[in-house]
Length: 373
Ligand code: CNA
Image (cartoon, rainbow, N blue to C red):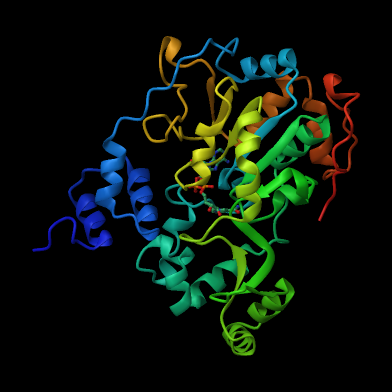
C-alpha cells in the first residue's frame, strides 16, 4: 500500500472524505482539491493548515458597532474615499447565473451531464486540452449578454459615482460590473472574462478575437474543431483556469490598493479560491471589513488574517458580517448612508440616473467617467 506521501492527491482526498473527517466542512475539501490542482499535495496543505494562524496584533476598536449601521457611520464620519470591494459569484446569482458551491443550485452540483471526474475539472487546463467540449458547452451558456446587472452591481456603481470606490476586485467572469457602468479602471477582473481569447499553450501568446470564438462555438463541435485547426491549437476565452496565473493587472494593483484602503467590503464569495481570498488579510490593519454573504466565509481560522467577526471582546476590532443576500445587504447599506433613493434610481434607469458625489468628495477631481459596455 502506498504511504500517504506517495498516494495520488485525488485518492488521498477521497479517503479523507470517505473517513467522514470533513463532514460539514466541505469547503476545506474544496480547498484541498484546488491546491492539489496547483501541485500542492493535500498532506502538505493539511500540515500548513494545522499551524496556528499567526495571532494578529489587536487594535483599538474602529467600528461604533459591528453591523451595517456601524459601517455606514464609519464611512460618513471618517469620510472614506478608498473603499475596496471584493466580490464573487454571489452578486450574480439573482441575475440567474448559478454560483459554484451553493448546494443544489451551484454549478458544481449540476455538472453530471458533462461526466467529469470531479467538478473542478471543467476549469482545469489539462482536462480542457483533452476534453474541450464540456467547457465550451458551459461557456456558451454563460456567455455575457444573456444576463443583466443586479442591485449589488449597481451598488458598486453607486460607490464609484459617489467618488469613494478605489477598486473592485471581482472573481466573476460575467462582466456585469462593467454592464452596470463601472469604468474599466475601477475594476480588476481577477479571474479574467470573455473580453478576449487566446490559443492555449502558445508562447508568445497568440490572441484571437473573442467574436471568432463566439461564432465558432455557435456552430457547435464542427465550429470549434475548425477554429482549432485554423489557429493551430484550442482557443479559450481569457478566463483563469486552476493553475494559471492571475492577470498582470491584479499583480500590479493589489498590494497598494489593499494597504491603502480605508474600508473593505466583501460580497458574495466563499473565499476559498487563492490567491484572491488572501486579499482579505492584506487590507490595512485599521480598515474595517464588511462581509455580505449568506454563509460565513474567510474567518481567521480558515484564512490568514481573515475575519474576526465571530470572536468576542477585543479580539474583533473591525469586522462585521451581514448574513443575507447581497442585494438586500447592499440596499441596507445604501439606506443607512442615506443613499437608498439614488441606488434605486440607478437600478430603475439601468445605470443612466445621475448620482451626487458624497459631500466629502464634492470638490475632489472626478474619476474616470462611467461607461457602459
Ligand atoms: P462560490 O464558491 O460558489 O461561493 C459563492 C458564495 O456566495 C457562497 O458562500 C454562497 O453562500 C454565497 N451566495 C450565493 N448567492 C448569494 C447571494 N445572492 N447573496 C449572498 N451570498 C450569496 O463562488 P466564489 O465566487 O467564491 O468562487 C470563485 C469562483 C467562482 C471564481 O473563479 C469565478 O470565476 C467563479 N464563478 C463565477 C460566476 C460568475 O461570473 N457569475 C459564476 C459561478 C462561478
